[in-house]
Image 1 (cartoon, rainbow, N blue to C red):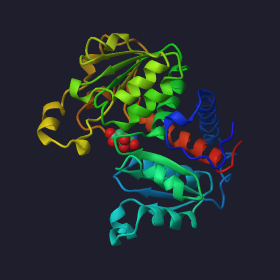
Image 2: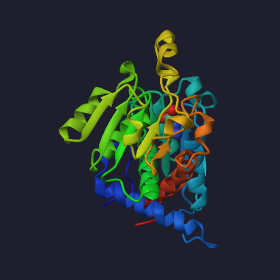
Image 3: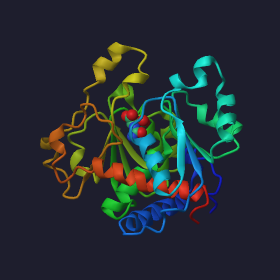
Image 4: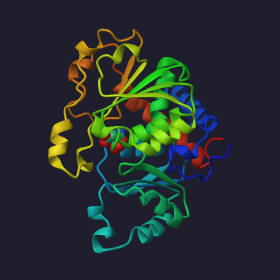
Length: 311
Ligand code: NCD
């Protein structure tokens, strides 16, 4: 397995063996960080991460930056293209070439699906996709897998339901690609108009993954080990009336969970809008805030592997 210098553009670029290795390293880091003098504290000393965010973000950007700082590295970048020379008409390719001469790794979020691939072609440093339009968000899906592994002890054998906006939600696309390498049962639960993208379904069919599609959440809940909620991606809708029709299609409340399996966990990449009622937060099933913390460990492991701080 070789991680040094690698781009992270799509979940399809990683084997199961590689994903399991990254998860293992993230679990090592999680254990180490609790020690009085963490071993990983300075492994990226002198390295710089550039975070270029052309779309809003809280967790993804801050967790990448925090991960770099906790490994002894530094950070630069921008949280909105409004403050960069893109505003003056500079091309993305020139921006990327410029950043390549300052930083050692580039983390980028963009509303256009091909932007990270274009960046990777123009960069002399590794490029990590931190969200590409309605395409993919591979590092979120890696941290989702870490959360499942850490909370339930395994991934194989589980029944996992992905709920909400499966058409425009990029995290569920990457997560489905990764899960296709495990022995899982998948449920895709969404309004019919926001069903899982065909390109993802085709890839699952090719790999003989067991999946079912439905638009009813309630009666599926008792079968699930993982309930992965998502936000309806308002910013991707061309038609606001269509958004109004589906915006509150699935709202999970504590009452919905009475027939859930004892150990079932509820995840969400966040931000949530109204799809998880706050009364779920205090149930034994809620794990979406722990999931945020796993994101830090996962990104620490990934950066350390890509930049050669860890083998
Ligand atoms: C997600 C995203 O940006 O795709 N957020 C995240 O990175 N945790 C999910 C979303 O915005 O709904």
